[in-house]
Length: 81
Picture 1 (cartoon, rainbow, N blue to C red):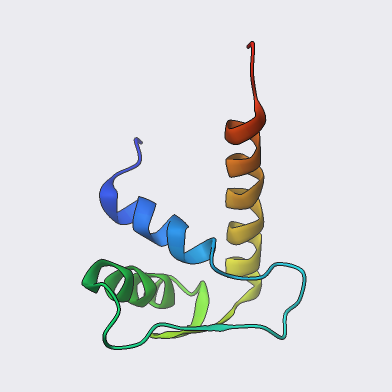
Picture 2: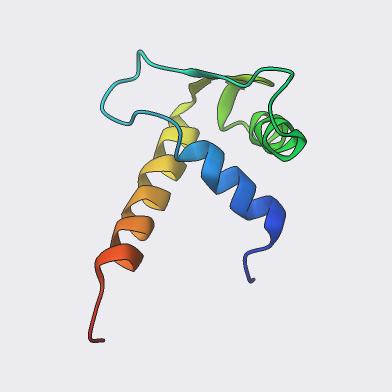
């Protein structure tokens, strides 16, 4: 399944979380870009964040954010493959 615009927005929201601590969450304000607001709501509906406007990563959300971070690192540093 290829990435679509909605999935990319969700990955961008996951990238906003600090994976070094479980004590830091995010708050997506009502004046944020509509795509960001909708992506955060979808992550909530999928059980990846604790609130429709962000909050904290759930255990599943933390796994997703870690994996997306690893993928981003690989894609940004891989060369000569």
